[in-house]
Length: 470
Ligand code: GDP
Figure (cartoon, protein in one colour):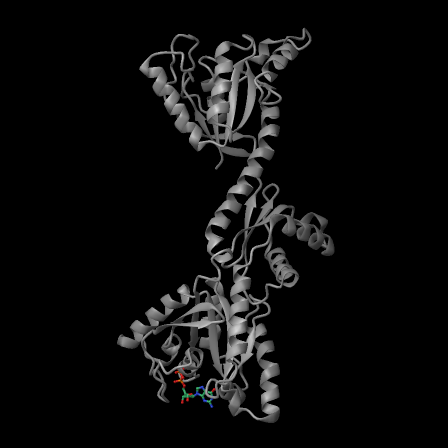
């Protein structure tokens, strides 16, 4: 939540405003200017119509001129509160007019809190008559503080709360967006600048005997993994590393991942361990290459067995980039070759409707063919997985896409105010919605599909989160 600090010299009504904002009447507000009753910073969750923010009630800020350890400590505490806040509500007393101490507070704020957006509130305005011009005069004076237009309020009567709401709302909204973007950037920084330096983590998964080890060897271009005809020979998860076009690739081998389907439930031997290890490796991978056996496909006329569909779905659900590799293409001749090349991508799409455009690469590990095609696809999937779209571009896209689509019921059209990418790896977006409406599954599918088509993000899982506009 954004944090708002209530600040001002003693007795301007900070606690009264704090109490109004948190809607609890637990703190007393004293009227004696000599007694600094609110020495500690109190914190609460403010509710102003549909706005929610954290509010800090600062103790009276005193200028350096004021002596006494208590006051100095107070200033320090306010300083701490300041460090946490993005906004300050600077209270002055509308009846008193600007006091030297107000000017000191203003100076202090400018010196210590230049990055904090400050709004001046003329409290106790209920007693001023605008007809007599006293309010306008007070506002003119408050302008001198240099924090823009002041808002006349009354913490006691609630006067001016609507104006405060209208001023705060766009500021808080903008702040929320920035926070989300910063979070995304932080997480993503490795992808953009360090992208080429950081290893791409690739998992090669598939049923036994589809040719994973052979493929690994082709990729490594040396015999580092044992290859043999027996199922489940490469039981241990091998972690190997190789360079491809200047990029380091980590292979998180997950041999054994699909072997469970061929084992009994009671088998708690090393294979079970390897399954667990494989699962962990899968989560560690950036891109998952699911290897299928072309000969098997031709024989059964089915692209994927149940276990393979499950693993593909899991990879997608875990937000990994998925590439399907059809191995042993050397065994298919003529027409059969053609049929498989045509049928597999279509069938994969039907079986995995969650992700459109999953890439399929046809290789022969034994003959060492398809290494380039496979690696090119793996890297391209990785780059899509890392991709980051600017908010400006996304919102232009959003307007276009919303006008392109027509909703049967106009009222059902989602009211998306902003759309922004908060994270990459995999690309994660936030739709800011007006009011309490939620995106329907159909809307989410429509948005995902459009994003994929319009930004060429096929084959990788996209996530869309929803937030109500604050
Ligand atoms: P894994 O269990 O998935 O690691 O499979 P292996 O790599 O051990 O391969 C199983 C068998 O399939 C071995 O006899 C390999 O020689 C064979 N094999 C692997 N790739 C190919 C290929 O592209 N073409 C053909 N014809 N055989 C292959």
